[in-house]
Figure 1: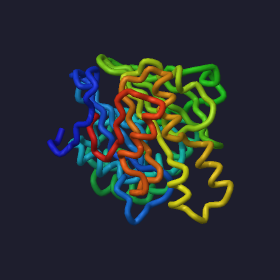
Figure 2: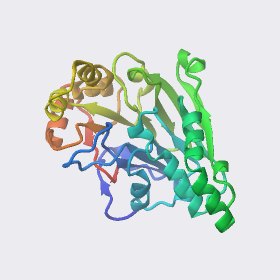
Figure 3: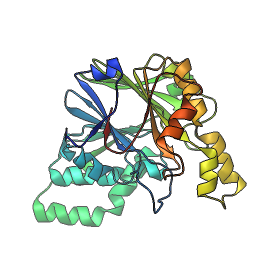
Length: 303
């Protein structure tokens, strides 16, 4: 990893993990860009035995991935928590960069609907470009690279966590979570030396506490309601309700971490992603309900 990456965690289990590393590529969120924004769109990479597993692929993810020291063509798996464009806006582009860099094997993309439609639409949108490049350079067709593994939200996942995939490095399960009208999931990764849970975007009632039980690291979204009102003073009641009920306040994030006996809590998808709330204030609010290790995520932070 580049020496410029911030190393944040003092938690023993995380610090002693020799085979697993978590890097936050982008820690912002929401379908907005502010003049004083300092965070890229939501994306993280879990590195196990040197192999990167990408979680979400928001705006700026390809560049951040390279800045973290990785190669596009090394990614075999991408996990999308839900199909809001702040989480998938660079998903197709990421795979196109991988293809252009030399990737020929499929990249497995996992996530809830409308994953297959998104990937098919991306191929059609760029078919003119892809076909020209294939003819000019002799590359194999781009459409062989994206391989959708869409979660049936009316299937087994309705009854509890669903085993998504496993290989020699990780085992990944998904949990259906509440996030307004969009189908959304959380992911838990079990590696040889760490358990890492990603909440994705969520709010309201779901089973995230049991899903994250005893996890070494919980990467959880967070929203400060009053700061969001300050950021968007003209927001209507429907938008305000989305902020309040479809995301998670810092005190509730802390409660979840405490009830789940989380070893290390990482705040991610930080809303608002401007300077209205300081890192000290985020931490203070979370510590009202959780006394474990709290990390306020920043872009390119290594946990």
